[in-house]
Amino acid sequence: MFQLLNTLEEAQRIIKETPLTFLYISQKNCSVCHGLKPQIEKILSEYPDMRLIELDALDVPEVAGAYQVLTVPVLMLFVEGKEYLRKARIVHTAEFKQEVNRIVTGYHSVLGE
Image (cartoon, rainbow, N blue to C red; front, side, top):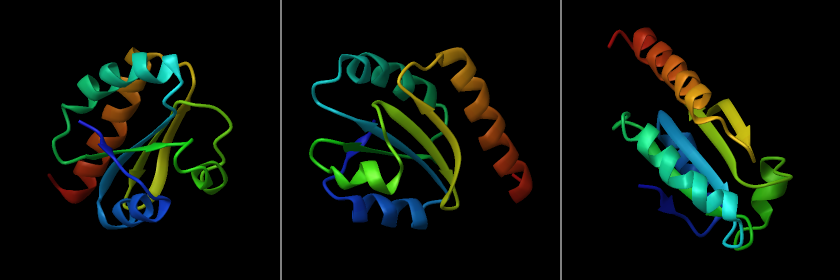
């Protein structure tokens, strides 16, 4: 489940401190955001070591400038604080799942896990 955060600073701290972090940027009034979120949560549930966080772009408007967000939803995967994957608006879940798996598997193989 995604943890809804209230500040950009809190999100940036978690991204910096957590090896695998997934950021979901949405808005309360976004039907695509609400429809996609459970599908993304299901896919990401396969990665228990990944931290799932969410920011609402209406409540935290500075997220738009910090991450160049022009639309919602925006899905971002960070590995050791660096952005490795970004998807926006319309996301093909099968393709998304493969991309996340490739990145996470690669990360774990580098660690020797």
